[in-house]
Length: 208
Image (cartoon, rainbow, N blue to C red; front, side):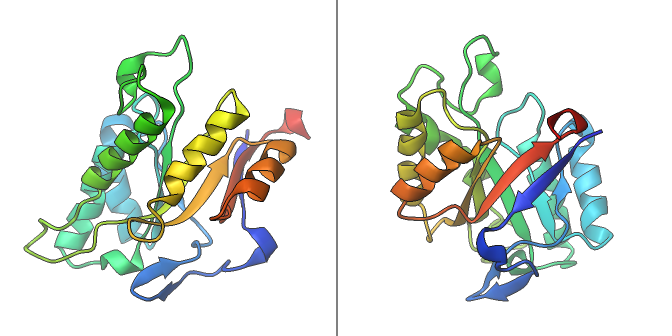
């Protein structure tokens, strides 16, 4: 058994609220969409109907189906069960790892790291573009973009973060990082203009 802990610096914004028309902070419970496969749309729709207002996904298609997750959100918005400003959407940029299937990534894995990040974010924004729902003028943005894991080289991790920062606050509200050790997090924090709003790490019995 394992679980994911989300750490918010200084313990701030632990309770969901809205500010300037966007979700501010993070809900106490976020619905995870990994390994849901073809059932992602149905399960996200059900989760939102049951009271979840936070959704966690990722753009890499090996374990996630971001587009299907977004489709579940669109169903709820179309039925006016929830407004976009009352929903927290968190997705991730996943760095390519040699030996993995490049078709699972929403970018050209042979492109430079900056281009990969731009293309991944563009794909996520397209998936979560709600402007066509019943003609409503829903704003197009992501509440949190998380770096799924640090790149093998620290300098590439810092490049990813600098690209992330160019989208804040117009298209991305906050930034985060997952699967990160403390030394890497500290170096990232020290160099970042937009500081990480959350750290999402998995804990298991074998890790103590």
